Length: 408
Ligand SMILES: [Zn+2]
Image 1: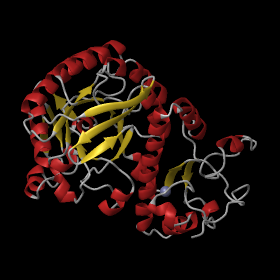
Image 2: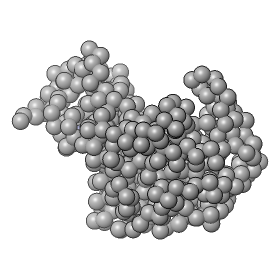
Image 3: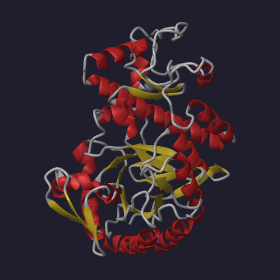
Image 4: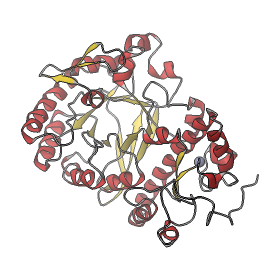
């Protein structure tokens, strides 16, 4: 296990701005990590990815072990070489992916059918470590059991105890000296189980600690409730990572509760259907109202897409089914979340985090409705006699008209 030099640069309450020194790069948190499930961030070339300001990306152990197989990736020279990126990479352990499949769990590990060809497959702490060490990411994750939302208490108790044993086994099986290893806290929705798991995992000792078992359909408030009773039991002097969470409101509230690192697929998944996040709210560029809108997606965004293309152009690309639409939309979403996290970091360092947080609540209230205009203050639309917020809502009327097309 490679120790990551880690500093807390500043904090406001539980919210922290930290720095992780990885060999391939320095990471400043709070950080959002784009996901490259299949050793590729979908539709985004590394060249564009590097231009988004992404500091570290994710790849999936479960998927890559199936196709192309970890031996092939190792033969190719490791994940970085294989996928052509110099960015630090974090691989998950596969635990989260298999939890949703039809499976048998015993002390040894998990047996399940591979979703593509139905072949019987086995994952265990040792197997997961073997795969991850061959993939060669900068940060590996322990193999844990992610229990479903609504699991009964008795099972959850046994599962937390087993996860602790699995994490010990993960640490024993992990021998790669240039790779860091993070533990994962489980415990479902029970405060005492979260506390127990957090303490047991800290006791084993890892280079960072993740909160697992969230983003399983529990909703924003429940997620906050669990973090409230979890992060206080996690070491202050190590990075903390909340797995699978990535909406603006979830991010700011998790940071307020002491989380530093995040990953999520919605940025790229939603981009492919034209949904984009901006400082004005979420917008769907396929809406009719953007057909002749020559402004950038977000006039504050500095990404390649916003610097070079208009809403009208993206609208057109989506309408004609041009695959570049997915690329340009994904580039914007990834870049916007980098800018969003950087602004959050600044607010922690300069003491304005609470006002930043309040502002996020205004732009992205719970439920995160799409902004019908894609511009202007969300307040103004609330006053429009209950105008439809849904993306199906009528476009043209009351739409943006004063906005100046961006010239260059
Ligand atoms: Zn942009």
